Amino acid sequence: MRRNIFPFILSSISILLLFTACFRTNSSSTMSHMPSVDPVFNLNTVEDLYQFLTYNEQSYPLISAHRGGPSEGFPENAIATFAEVANKMPAIIECDISMTKDSILVLMHDETLDRTSTGKGKLSRKTYAELQEFYLKDIHGEITEYKIPTLEEALTWGVGRVIYTLDVKKSVPYQKVIDLIRKTKSEANSIIITYSANQAEVVNRLAPDIMISATIKKADDLTRLSELGIPDTRLIAFVGTTEPDTAVYSLLRQHGIKSILGTIGNLDRSAQKAGYQLYADFIVRGADVLSTDRPYEAWKALDFYIKKRNLNSPFIK
Image 1 (spheres, rainbow, N blue to C red):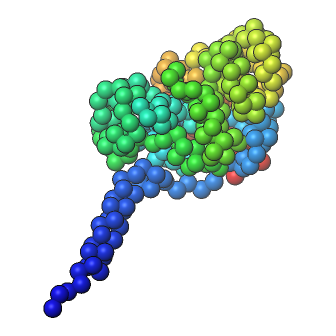
Image 2 (spheres, rainbow, N blue to C red):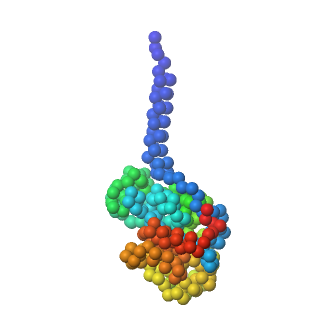
Image 3 (cartoon, helix red, strand yellow):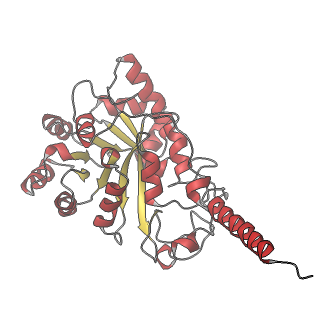
């Protein structure tokens, strides 16, 4: 008598599809590397972000973790690294946006994959699927379990947990970044970095509600931004990697604009030699945010500074 093998075939196919689906899901950075962090910020609307980043005498100083704050076992531009920082402090996360061959926005600083991952060659010549074959390396060049995340994954994870400053690489259209900010409803925790007044004008024209980090090292820089129609309320000022003249800080404060001092490089090295307390001195002298490669050391100083002055913010849990 002939046996009906159709149910057996159907069952086998179902098992195979289930296994394949599980394999694909488990290999995805979305499922494997979305670490849990309790909400840190009470930023529910973009208006909340404007208010939080408007200077006042009781302003709450912040750390900006350069490239996300990589450390031993935690690569740059990785969501797990952002979580490690966010579990220790309310943080701004500076991260870098590049684009794959198939136009997927991912987090990667270099044009090539070699330094920070197990991949080789230019990122722009790889599809996103190809990138998922590689693993990220930590600050010592050790291979980790983490893969290259998409910007969409990072933005989705970051809501309520971090504030992002998004460094958009030259090959990436601002509109694609803005579209993902809209899609993930991340307007209240996203700032787009620009390097010239013209770039800032483009971003402001495309998305008048989104905050911009603009380079302001002298009074003329602020005047130029104003002439291009960019409101003070949409700006946070990057004042450079050396401390500016105190007049620059005074001018920015008169306009309610907070400042980011880049301690990456010489100022971080100075603090390493002189002691982490130097980071508090940068705040005392006028900086509001410290963009650093040493977020944990810098936070020690800022945490002491905040507690000593009994500072708080309704926008920080």
